[in-house]
Image 1 (cartoon, helix red, strand yellow):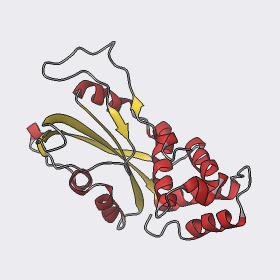
Image 2: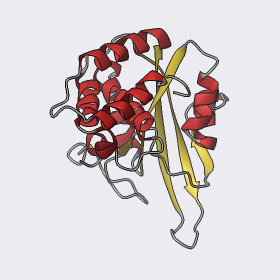
Image 3: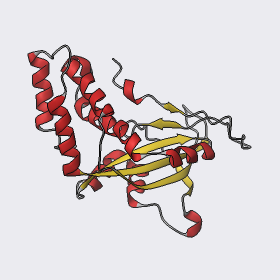
Length: 223
């Protein structure tokens, strides 16, 4: 099983309601889990609320500059976990519709599954082999679970300008972020409930079960 099976890019077809803007190709935004983001140097040419004199919020600035690891450092001193939904593309209207349509209750399971997948994938090339059916069963359970307590805290966008390099031409696009938080103890209690109730088929081997147990026992260390 492809480890990113559950996190395939979301293609939103807005071509029936949007008109093409001069200088930009009309394509739907591409949504990517927060843990899977290739960093490439860019200049910020515009951002949300710039015309009112407001700066980029700290959580977004950390993400734009250094990726999700910088947000995790910020999160360590908070009582809540921070999850970031992101989408990028070259059509502002399509991205804005994605942003407006985001629903914390409906979209949080995908964010949780991406982060939990990343936790089980640290130092592991093939999670299906390492953990057996436990891995797929866990990700499915996380994706189907009715999470509670998550809150859409904020959203932000920037317009980015990329200089040409040896591999790619110059380009300009937008990146949208949505910040979702959930109280740490509340998240942990729900995840522990999932751990207790999953029933993989076929059952993992002794070695696979031991590997999964090692991750579970220290799951929140560095999470």
